[in-house]
Length: 558
Ligand SMILES: [Zn+2]
Ligand SMILES: [Zn+2]
Image (cartoon, rainbow, N blue to C red):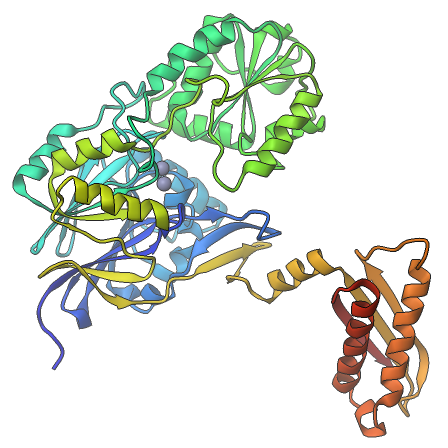
């Protein structure tokens, strides 16, 4: 007979093994009748390895089967790696969503764009508010991070309390919003925390992340030294940083011009919850052209080298309204996110080529601080919460394992680092992995959600490496060649010793020979003809170029 005993489980379906696409599930009840809550539903971004794929989602197939048992989706904060997948995956989960006002504002924007706004039930919850979802009593705990309204969650269940930290650091002066609610965390610790599921991003970094106020103290005088136009690149979601850049501009007699769609979107979200007040109105890109060089500060998207973002277009000289050149400065108030090294290097080289002076966190410490806890902050959090079980999340494998060792050193009685898809039973008994469920990734390819490494992407990667050859042949009613085989090559090199014409001619001959070798019956079948042509062309290409290109064949009959 199936067990009737209630269990409390944690199941990461994203966010463990890699940074990004946080998708955490908590389950309560006997195994055959678990009730679930989802905490965060984020995306990650593609890179050079996923040409044409910008957005990557966690695969929800496992929990989709139990969608009717999902009591709610709770979002800790508005970063893309925590809410970016809602609009993509909500139709497969269909549970109500809870979020604080700033997060809810941005979520609504996304759902409106996806034409889902009328379908999704969104509950706005106040900072420090409470949510009851079946056996789960949730309490929001105000933390500090690099976006407004970052929340930790105290998840109380009949089998114990979980502190799900979400993303956090301890910023003693976050500029916008309240400081970390340490009283609430200490109180939770006094009452007893069974497990703490905690951010591992900076577990290798000693000390503390630093405060947004330090960035303000650095940027105001730094911008005062600049004579020409100034561009500041930062994440638009870091509203405190936007606010700092705006105040640094004002302190130095400059007006602020927002450049890039997400800057405008975030400014609107910030204003909706009463942030970024008492600033001079922003000027438009057109207005900025009428200001002297030392009278304007451009606040730009694109700090990660995103090709379509404002800063890349400015660096390419293709931005319609904004240009930078000799005497101007660009401040990267941001860090290099792993995976973006190459586009950022290209962007900075392009700006340098225009004689723009660059300021980065490497050469000007203090113009950026991280939003995630370093080791001193992690230790502090463990001292406040005193959990029985440490469950690291939000990191690559090496971060999670380092976090396990760190928690062990702090005398946390149990530590466990699940991979995506590992179901951890937190209670009753010692924490252990009791099941492994499918937990892959989905790729958004040209707006279509596809399996990870699906055929289209595989072919595109193959073509990018090896080029492509198209072969077409026209056959008559008796399968005799009327025209062709005609061959075209894309992305294959040629040289004077062996010009392309000759190569194509050789490929065509190879195709013709293959066709002639087919028996009469086979020649009547298009797929047999296609296979023969394709094989012959691949083999000949291997001989000519040492490569096997993607081969596309077309057989026409007249
Ligand atoms: Zn995150
Ligand atoms: Zn975050």
